[in-house]
Length: 248
Image: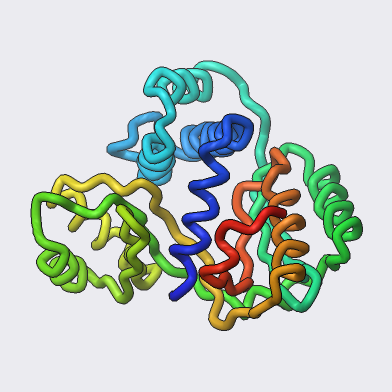
C-alpha cells in the first residue's frame, strides 16, 4: 500500500485552501444527506451516517453544519442522488476510477468526458480499470500519544490491520474490506477517532512518470475532483518524494 501517505499529504495540502475546503464540505454534506435518506438520522443506528459524520469532523466541519444537514435531510425532500462510477485512462497509461453522486447522470458523464478529452485522457468501458484496484479498509488518524506506537500497532494487528504508513503526525492503517468493523471497534475501544476512514480502492500496481508527465496527470485528476458530482477519484499514479511539492 506504499504511496497512499504521499497522496494523503497532497490532499491535506490542497484541502487547506479555502476554495478546496468548501468543495470538500459540499461532498461530505451530500454523503450525509444520502446516508440519512437511505437509513436513519441516528448515527448509532446508521453506520454510513456515522462514517460520514466522522469524516466531516476529520476536516473540521462545524458541528452546526453537520446537524443542519441531517435535519434538512429528515424534514425536506432533497434531490434524488444516484451513485455512479466511471472508469478511465489518464495520459501515459494511468488508470482512473471515478466515484460520483449525482442527480443528473447525463450531465455528470458529459462533464467527465469533457475533462478527459481536454487533458488527453479517455473514458473506458466498465471493467477495464476496476481489476487494477482492490477494495480495502483504511483509517487515517493522528499518531496516538497515550500509548507507544508499537503497542498501538500490535492492537491494530490483532483487529486485522495488514499495513501501516507513517506520514508526519499521521498514520494510515490498511486492512481487508471485511475487517472495517473490527478496526473501527478497536479504535473506539481506545477512544481514538480517525481523521478519515472508509472503504477505498487501492492500486495493485503503480505507474511511474517523470515530473512533466506527473504534473499533466495531476491537472486532470484535480479537474475531475473539483466537479461537484464527483466524490472520489482513485488512480494508480506513483508519487515520488520529489514530486510532492510540484506546481501543476
